Image 1 (spheres, rainbow, N blue to C red):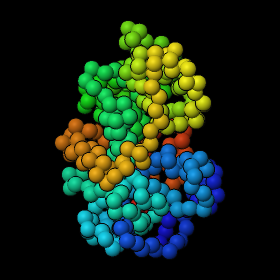
Image 2: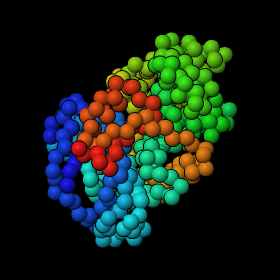
Image 3: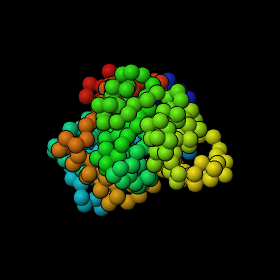
Length: 326
């Protein structure tokens, strides 16, 4: 079968399409024929050597498809069933992927494959950020960086569903329109954003800052927080967050800082499926709008990541498998 592999760490150009052996599911696994794969920063971090995963390896962590074979001890998934996953399926940029059954989630009929892929990694991330990393309550004002991105649009919508007032940062007028369409109450640029936040909150600051940008936004994010506010760092699109002097948290107003990961907020199958069940229900009834920022044939994986890493996206990027290997 065909798959995307990484034989050495580097830029998007190191993604290669190769012929590899067809996998078979082991105990507790299912074999899935891919229809759509998700494009994520985690894939970029794996590729450039930031994560512990060492080359060579099979690329891709997220996908949607149809179960074609079931391993031993799998009792709740069947051949022919549509499933999706955001972890537990390393090698998801391929025609077929082996997925841990306890990491696969059934997809309801009301949700199409592309929408399902858009609410897996990004949607689950937005869900745990807004419900657990800092649990938004009605009346909170929060700051969402990169509000037009895949996570940003989802997070803005989930925050609004939980009763928040949302301030979003963006880099272009087009992205400002996308952030407003997602429900952001105020949309601002990155230059001097802490001063803008102060003006919008009468100097009080926000209850939480959700930051997937990283290095470029740390200082302004801490300055934007209210007393006992929470700084939630979940990504590093502009580079890693530098070491933080904890005494700065006291002088800033007894602040909290957390660096959550999706793995730790989907530790059990029950927790994972409770999040995806709620997300799929929101999509199905129209409460959560999915934005697809671009579709690329899987063979154009390098170009998809050039777009992602240039921060040119508005919504979720997908790799499509139907006629996608030419």
